[in-house]
Length: 235
Length: 104
Image (tube, rainbow over all chains, first blue to last red; front, side, top):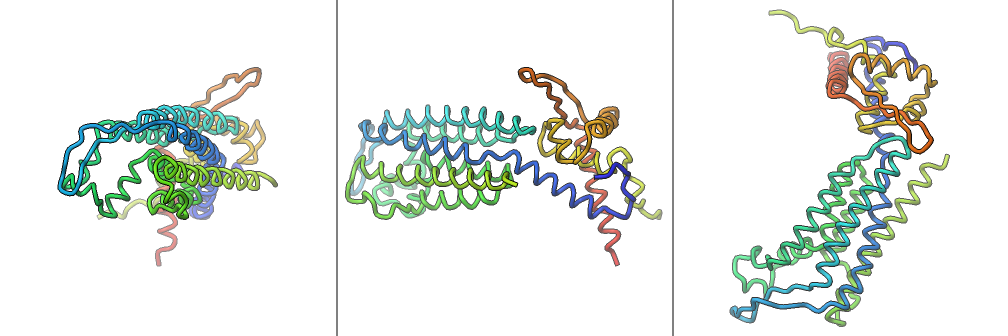
C-alpha cells in the first residue's frame, strides 16, 4: 500500500476492491467455526446418558377422539439440555473472543450466543407448559400429525435450536461454508436422516440413535472446519 | 436548476487515502483491531502506521487504547461513530464515482 492520496477519478474501483478484500480477510481471521461445532457435539453426546437414564413423566392427560393426549416431560433430559446448552454457549463466547483477540481482532459472536441461549430457554419453557397442542387446530391432530407439524416439532428441539443458532453464526460471519453445513445438518434433523438405525428398537434407544447421528455430524463438521482453517493458514 | 455536484467534491481528504481507508475498513469489520494486525495486513512500518493513526485520531475517526496483557503491551484501535459515518460516506462516493465514470 502507498501513503499517497488516491487520484480522485483514477482508482475508485481498485479502492473498493481493496476495501472488500480487507473486509474478507478480517472475517476469515475472526472465524473459529470448529469451536461451537465441537462444543455442541460434546453436549449432544452428553445427552445420551441423560436420555437413557431418565424416565418420562406424563400429566394432564385427557381423552380425544381416537386416543389420549398427555403432556410429556422428561426431567433428566430436558434439564440436561437447558443447563448444558447455556453453559456451552457461555464457553463458546469466551473462547471464541479469546482466540479472535489473540489473532488481533474482535469477534461478532454475541448475537449467535444470545440466539442459542434464548432458543434453549424457549424450548425448555415450551416443553414445560406442554405447548405441542398450541400448534394444531384440534388436539386430536397430535395423534396423527401432518408432515409440516412433524417437521416443526423436530425443529423445536434442542438439536433443532443448535441448527437455527448456527444459521445466525453463518450470517454474522458471511460464512457460506457454514451455511451449507448447517442446511445439511438441519436436513438430517428435519427429514430425519437416520439410515433406519434403531427404528425398531423403540423407546430410549431410538432417541439415542438420533443423538449419535446428530453429534457425529457436528463432530465431523468441526473436524472439517478445523482442517480447512489449518490448510488456509499454512503458507 | 443547478447541476448536481460531482462526487469528487464531497470526498474527505482524511479518509480518501488508501492506507487510512484500509485502517477504517479493518476497524469497522473487526470492531476492535490490534496495532500489529493492522501493520501486517496493510504492509506498513510501525512508524508509518502510527502517523496514519494520528491523523485519524485527530480527526475523531478512531480511538486508540494502549494496555497490557500480562507483560505484553498491546494497542487496540476502535472506530468511532464519526469514523463509521465517514467510512460509509466514502464508500458511497466511490460507488457514485464508478457509476459516473461508467455512464455512457
